[in-house]
Every structure is written in structure tokens, then in C-alpha cells.
Amino acid sequence: MKIKLSNGKTLPLEMHKIKIVQPTCLPPLRRRLRAIEEAGYNTFLLRSQDVFLDMLTDSGTNAMSDNQLAAMMTADDAYAGSESFFRLAEAVREVLGFRYVLPVHQGRAAEHLIVKALVKPGDVVLMNYHFTTTKAHVDLAGGKVVEVFGDEALETASSCPFKGNLDLERFDLAVHEYGTERIAFVRMEATTNLIGGQPFSLENLRQVKARAAALGIPLVFDGSLISENAYFIQQREPDLAGATLQEVLRVMMSQVDLFYMSGRKSAAARGGLIATNDRALYERILPWLPVYEGFSTYGGMSTKEIEAMAVGLREMVDPAVASSGADFVEHFVARLEEAGVPVVTPAGGLACHVDARRFLLHVPQSAYPAGALAAAFYIASGVRGMERGTLSTDPDPSGADVLADMELLRLAVPRRTYTLSHIEYAVDRLAWLFAHRELIGGLRFVEQPPVLRFFFGRLAPDGDWGAELARAFAADFGEDC
Ligand SMILES: *Cc1c(COP(=O)(O)O)cnc(C)c1O
Image (tube, rainbow, N blue to C red; front, side, top):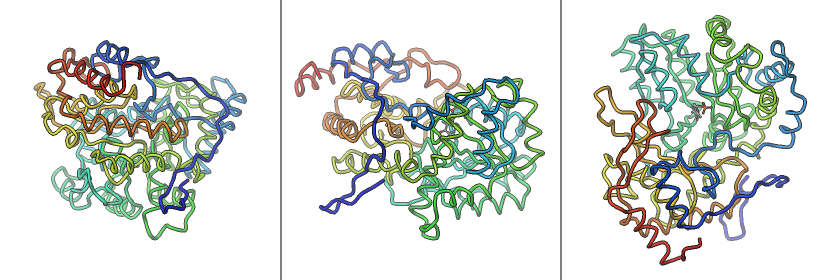
């Protein structure tokens, strides 16, 4: 929740008290340099003990509520017919309005099953933007992702409130090019994760649904970050200013044929689900659930997490919860803008995104500027972010790099996990890094895995810039911080 201060500025307020804490420590500079070298300059390969603030992702790292933890104790461990599942199904019905629910162990498992049921080789899937795991599943099924975003989606500095909108003219062009028969589904990702957590408007969702329905194309909705998209609609779309988040969500869901989500983000529990009111779609997916995930009343999740997800779904429509990440992100972005650091605007859901291309004008895309910036920021701060750029984009079949649309350092803000002083610390160190940006060089692959290379790939710096950066840092702050 944001509150107005007497100086006219706004401040995001934590609408919770901290009851349980987990210590974290700031490893000294020398250890940070060693750790990033041992990790092959890939922040995914750092050990948690070497990380001060973990801004890699908001996935599974959100603080849980007292009610979520209490519900976990009531879990029913029955293999089949678990009461925990029925409590989850009831929460899905109440919050999202869907009758049929398929639990899965996390979001990408939902993508696997949906793609398996709906995509044949040669098919295309239209999207407002892809997500790494979604695209991997479509590719593995012999399909192709066609992105139909608007021009504003890729403008990092913008005031457009809905950069996640699907472009309707390009949708029509894609239908013309591929033909309705080949389009397996159109997928709307609620806050486009890879391009700055940018939302789409309800108006856009309605227009997409109307077009798709007229052609008999199902609308699939990735709701992993749904509470943030609903919050932005409520804040930014004039017609909906008076609506509650629950009302916004129900109107959104009325446009959806097949819903899925990772429960690890908005719902703050480690799991995922697929939901629909279309019995035929449900029945196409159901047989595969026990093959890949588990029986239909647990789907690979622990029953404790199922209970936590049921509570998390109900809690995410509380404005204090839905805004907890987004308002911190907004503050983070505003403070970095004040410091002159290039960031994606407007602020989106899930994370503050630093524009590595503008930050490191001297590092070409082929040398992975966003990956270099993630490593450099870790050295300077002990804060772990994630590369979202060319490194996170797998090469084409010939093995050539595919240059990403954007080069972003994503600094996720797990919901209710960090405090404002943590954000201020990250801002300060990034501002320092920006002033010393000429010290940062590029990266090259030393070991490159064949799929989703960003997870396990190992890289090396061009030259010895990591050590040079550490020397400059020590000169300003000493060796011990
Ligand atoms: C995280 C995420 C996924 C994948 O979910 P996992 O639980 O990490 O498997 C899919 N889509 C979006 C938009 C996400 O943010």
C-alpha cells in the first residue's frame, strides 16, 4: 500500500509485521569475487550462503502468511481424494470462477500438459509475449511461438500503462499468414515476465477474446503473476477504478477458456494449477496428469503446499497483498531513475528491470551485457539478480545466437520478504556501479547446455574485469563490505 508523505512523495508501506526471520549475511568483497568465479559468472550457480539479498526470482521465495502456515498443518495426505485438493478447488472456484481444477507441481508442468494436449507439430501459438519455459515446451512439441506484441512493448523508457497488450492488427496478420487451423491457441501472459512485468488491459483481453472466439481459437491465460496484472488494471484502467480486485479478477477470468498458473508467485506457495470451465478441455488434459505429475488430487504437489496455495489464492485479492510487490518495485524503479540508472518504465510487477543495453553501451549484445551486469552487480553488492536477455534466449538450430529483444537485469522483489532498507541498499550499489560502468566488460560461454542454457551455462569474462571492478570497489568502500 502506498501512503502520501507530507513532502508530497509516496512511500510503499509494509502492511504486515515480521514474526519469523531468517538471518542473511553479506559476504565480504573477496568472497563475492571468488563465488562468482566459481559460479562461472552465472548467478544461477551461486550458493545461497554467498548471497545477501536474493533478487534472482520471486518464484517460491515470497513470505508466507500466518494463515498459510496454519493451513499447512491441516493437510490431508491421502494419495487419492485428499480433502486438501477439495479445499484448493473451492478456492479456485471462489476466487477465479473455474469448476475444473488440475493441480501440478509448478507452472511449467501446466505448460507441458497444455502443450501436450493442444499443440501438434507445425502448429503455432500466438502470445502477447513468450516465457522461457512456455516457449521450450511449444518448441519441443514441434510448434512455433509467434509473438504479437505492440511496438511499445519493447520501449524500455515509456509511459504506456499497458505494454503487455497483444497487438490486434498483428493478431489479424498472423491469422492470415498461418490460417486458423494451425493456431493451437492464443496465450495471454498476465504481466509479461520477460519484458519487465508489464500488464495488459482488460479492454485488450476482451478484444483478444472476441477475435479468438470468432475464429474458434481457445484463449489460454498464464496467470502466474495474475494479482499484479489485476492490481495494475484496477490502478490504471479508468473504467475499473471503483472495482475490487476480486471483481477485476472475475471479469478477467470470464474471458478465459483455459487458465494456468505457477502458484509460486502471486499465490505464495510452491505448486501450480490448470483450471477451466470447459469440460472437454479438462478431459483432454486429465489422463496425462497421473503420467507426468501425480494423481488428480495432488498433481505432484505436497498436500501442505496445496493447503498453502488455497489460502494464498484467497489472500492475493487482498489489496495489501496484491500491491506488496508492485509498490516496492515502483519505489525501486523511481529511486533508480532519480540516480540516473536506466530502468524499464513504467514499473511493472515482480521485479525492477535495469536496461543493460543503455547501462553498458560499450558491451555488444553478443557479449551478453545483461549477464555481465548481473555478475558485476553481485560483485558490488552481494545482491543476486537474473539475466533476461540474449543469454536467456536459446540459439537457433544452426547454433547461432538469437539476439534478444531486450537486455535486462531483473531484480525480483519477492513479496513481503525484503524491507525498504534492503531496496535502498540495492539502489545505492547500482548507482555506484553505474558510475563505474566502463569497468564492466562482456562475457563468453565456456560451457553451453543444449536447452535453456541460462540455467547451467558457465561463462568467463572478456579480460579480467571482475577483479578490476572489485579493486575499484575496495578503493571506495574497503575490503569488508
Ligand atoms: C514462473 C512463470 C512460469 C513457470 O512457472 P514455474 O512455477 O517456475 O515452473 C510460467 N509463466 C510465467 C509468466 C511465470 O512467471
